[in-house]
Length: 433
Image (cartoon, rainbow, N blue to C red):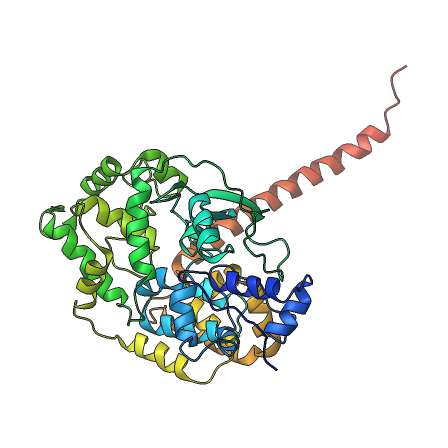
């Protein structure tokens, strides 16, 4: 069965918007009916930034609209792809081809990121007016929904619709329309927004490329601090100088609004601005990379040049990395692959708290596999030569507790005997009048 009159995606249009326009063209008012027509399934979640089942959508489009093209030209995946390891990038693309239950958001760090998505679907009144003149209809652009972008560089501040994110009706694709996108006068955007939009647009139009490793990102930031002279001695990064540079370039109100303000205490080891200049064990958000490079480089820097420089850094794979890649290459269910992605960034106990629903499904359907993977992962993180329990300390604590219990029991026995001795005397005395 073919979907009649399925629309061709416009340049920079979200795939979510294209599916919504398909419902308008077919006159479908029921969300379930649209899901039946397009996906042949009623369990699809209408996802704005990283939709899945793109292999199904590509069937209704011309041959040049491959799943890869849909991912890189009509989703927000290019914003995150360069900053995660290559194995994870490929795995996330595979999840977007098929169907996932939020696994891509977990693996890309979006679910746990300090930078939150906009609360409402947004639009630019100036761009909406231009769409109506050129195409005769509205559609949602990718850059309108990017966290950190508050304005259109051509027209001004972006406006919020009343469509909340995440969507209240999880299965409804809502098309851009006059009732949602009022054409009003826009305020002029801040210069900071232009910095963000310049780099975001370059990320969005980047073709599919292999991602640098954590090791390469670590070396890049060490080299960046060294070139700028932000070192104390020979090996210690001067984090206070970097912090002052960031605060000098970026407005404090903007940093606070986007949860990127460094803490006031210089001894806080959880400060993201410090962690990004240390050994990378997790990926950082595109906005964090932009903030650092805008503050430390000249105003003409480009994110493309940075990514090219990072990709040229030397790298090597540790035995643990090779083991994880081999494990991921085996045929696994999407849930098992999602669990591997979580374990690459956190221990099993934290992964269980991060995604309890995923853990429950795996425990119910793949219990032996789950317990074995968690056990092996915990062993990899533990040094077998270091005892997990300080037995001498435990014996001292137990001895002290036993002594206190003995003293308490002895005192209680003495008080009981004294009370018994007093009872016969009290029984022979009459009460006072």
